Length: 328
Image (tube, rainbow, N blue to C red):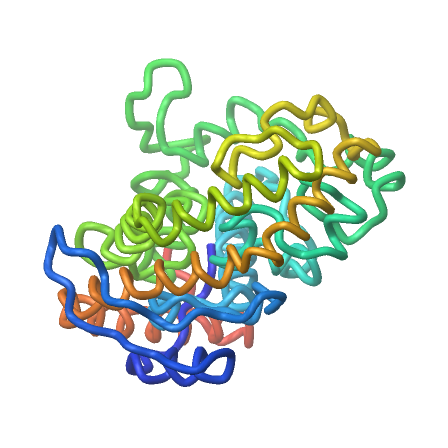
């Protein structure tokens, strides 16, 4: 889940893109119409420095890491009241873990030459591949007991029927799993899988994220650059579909804890071909244009989303500073 950025106007993104290229144009696209042209980021631009328009209504990656940790801590606190344990890390995620909360993380496949050389198509971690493989067994949290799962969900784990008491103590509605909802006034990240709370009625933020991505995949400007990327890969002896997200589909090492030499070599070529064709720049610009058009149509809903997000962030900060009243 990623944290919400302050609600800036479209001109803010335009200014960002102008720093990377020469022109920036956003317009009002009606449903079914092609999105207006947008500026294209230059080849080699760090993907993590790019921000899609919808991020103005979302939590930043660092905020998301803190929000997720607070949400998990609230569940743990609730479970403790029943004499049960719930595993939570000692602090919010940092380093490479935070980057994985970003909207742009692997959105367009592998794009960073440094991580491609080390991790290939594998998700990068803070530790080197060899030590990551050795520590894999420690990453998986211990299995919860039947009692813990009952209190966590507030339901019988066999029948699914609501359970209201455990050892004479009242279980709150929807169990301890809903503790973040009650304390922060928002669904927890673990429960909805979204990048930050406050997605609004109908999940407006996640819907725009998803629909703009699908629209970009169908846009002729993007399919054209996909074909150019594919030809570049073929010139380097890699036969892959004209879809960068499927480039690694045939690699057997993906099921292993760390990449092999073949995967690393292909990932390096993949990134190089993306840079040669400016695939990321074109794709990002087109998806940004589709998002701006959708944001214009949903401006009022998104304004409410940003307002709710700010209230939720304030609640998270109060918890972190030890001042938050935690309701069960």
